[in-house]
Length: 98
Image 1 (spheres, helix red, strand yellow):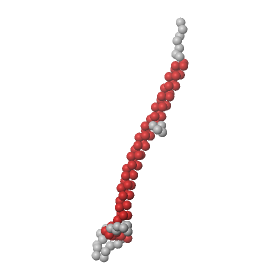
Image 2 (cartoon, rainbow, N blue to C red):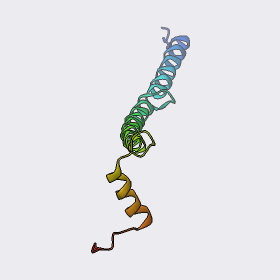
Image 3 (cartoon, rainbow, N blue to C red):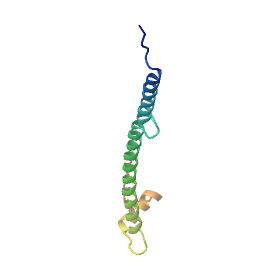
Image 4 (cartoon, helix red, strand yellow):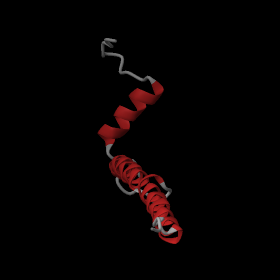
């Protein structure tokens, strides 16, 4: 009676297929284009969008102040406020509380 031995070619094929499947699964999760990296990039993107929105609001405020202090349109109240803040000016009849 003959002993049957496993086919080495089939074992090699399934072993190689298993190794490749594990490699591609690892690359899909941990690789440079994997799931973990995608989550990190999306979080960074959300943070940068929030920062961009804050900077847009700040820019709009600065453009508003610049317009109000321009030669074409001068807001005397804003000019008075800025002079007091930057130069430390006050009227003689005012009391300054710090």
